Image 1 (cartoon, rainbow, N blue to C red):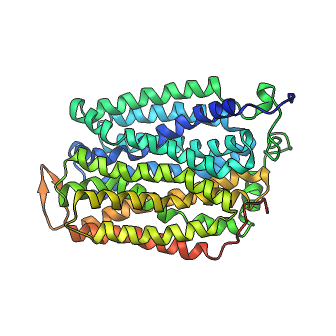
Image 2 (image 1 turned 90 degrees about the horizontal axis):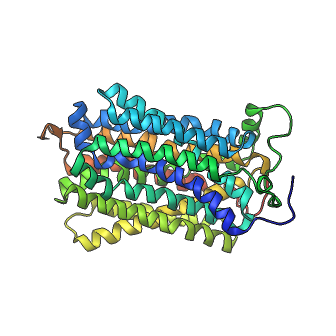
Image 3 (image 1 turned 180 degrees about the vertical axis):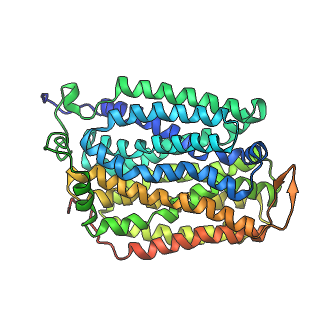
Length: 429
């Protein structure tokens, strides 16, 4: 039953914020291997390719679940998806923490990736149902900021925890926190304002659960029939993939080997990139809303990010200050991808917004899914036989060859985006 007033913003932020906690935890699990590469390689006696694949198992499951998640968000609502996802993620994290061998570690990582896959799409659905449309792009950016907060906790704090207690206790603690968040979601989150006695937001998708039989394939086909969606599917994977491949896996060993940084110092620097990425995302989303355009910021940001990545990868013998500035600039410019969510949402009807978000997030996460093991493959291909404490050490040229794969995808995405249609921040679908 619909109430007599719109929900207060503080309530909307509370509902959305509790859901965003799960996305925060999902991001923690996503990048946690970056600060324990040596420990994982030693524990399971694996090479860079195997470590890349172990880390990427999260992404394999995450990507596979995106379109089903989007469809289920339209049909069932986000609350049940978020709560069940948190419980399964907790079980997967527990399995990873106690894994006796690589198989069980990989299975735990796979379960975590598949279950946290519901988080971002569900928060986008809640943003549509609980906030005015003109705030959507900004809230998508705030959501990414929440995720990066999880990555920050998976940086220096996790590294210090590992130094003090080992990587397994750290992952056990993460499993417990994930389950607790699932309980909070069930208590605090509701799919739409009418479930708490308020008016639903105009233009939100309030009737997707009651329109007759479930037709997921029809919904998916309908979304893909809009020209912008297939184009936007491919464009942001390079930007996101580059940041998560570097900050989420290979940046720390690159910095420790070739800049002489400690693991904690290297994690601080890669975390700086993630923080810059997070802080810039809602600002760029809001700027896109204000200027009434989606494409220019993404294309300009892609060009600037390409230059920044070239400097990060090929510039050597620079001071820590210049290196920090470069990492901040790379994070800020890479945040321009955030407008693609609003771009896709405006390109389809409101009742297909969840499916469109799932398709978009699937395309985005294909980036790190492919790039993390691809960079590992390139590192092993160029390995010169060096070992330290049983773990492989790679040359600067090997890292440069691997990171060029990231840069190539950023450039390709920028070129593909040029063929999309500008929505001018209006619902055109």
